[in-house]
Length: 434
Image (cartoon, rainbow, N blue to C red; front, side):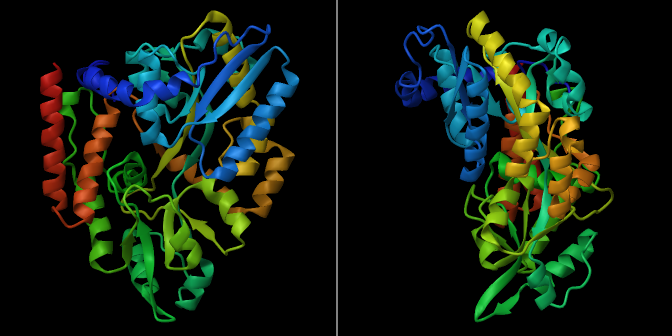
């Protein structure tokens, strides 16, 4: 998808920044050390939103390993909230000249950071690094925009359907669903009274945030839909695949088979762990958390309508424009992040899929796959994965798709009307930004 770099974001940036500054800038100044390199050591800050908390512990262990082997570079890892919480802080930091040295974030933010002049391209350094040949070639799409390479992949994943085998067995289900119709029927069968409480077939994420869109996109792609265009004016959200995907989610609600999450909290696993829902959309990053609970679980691919599909996710590491010394030191840390050593430990500890090809073939990781078959489902499903666009206007497209999904799930609108409203909003936004 190719959009003019300033098609969407520039028109709202100043207003957003003004709001963000008033809320966040005071807090951010406490994060910026005065004369941080006075001791002759380059001190770097890494902002991230790693979740769930046990995954943050894995990250800190790896950062500690880097610090122990690089006496001239020390990295401080700072959790700054989930994606929606980070954006105001990032904007305020850039405008207030208080940027971190590095940022862990989904690559969909790339276009916005470029427009802000916040990050630097890294293709020259990467071309000279042996790590380039070890990165999965499929991930370069998430790293590159406008002829430059802007980030290094931190970890990759995709969306699957986690399910409770014990609940399937209790409901008499012996075969996993592979199509939408089979999936709908299984969800109905799993929705029943158990010990006086309703057990639902599946939990669907409620909200208009990126989490909801990320989980819904595989269904749109599976039904033959898309959100790509050569120009913003040609973007068509009201396509048959999008309509079909919204109808399918709404059908699950109308059947009584699906229960909605709390707003913007569709990633929480409480109902799944308690057995109140038998299936939930999520990814391999939750494997560590699930294993620690001792609850039975397994994974199946996203059911198919016309073609197999899933959303490829994960976060990339961005290097901010700071000073030449800090930028080069940050790339040294980026090389460590993409290395076999880091990726193997990160993948085994969190469930993320390794971005390093050597890591995927390493003995420790192969042993991990043998112990946890769910990982193999995600690795195989990645072949059918699609990445979200990284152009500057994607956040506005996602926001309006999210509104359409939310309105449909809440019964406030038909799928067709919800998508038409989203399209009108985007058309107005694009026309005002030209």
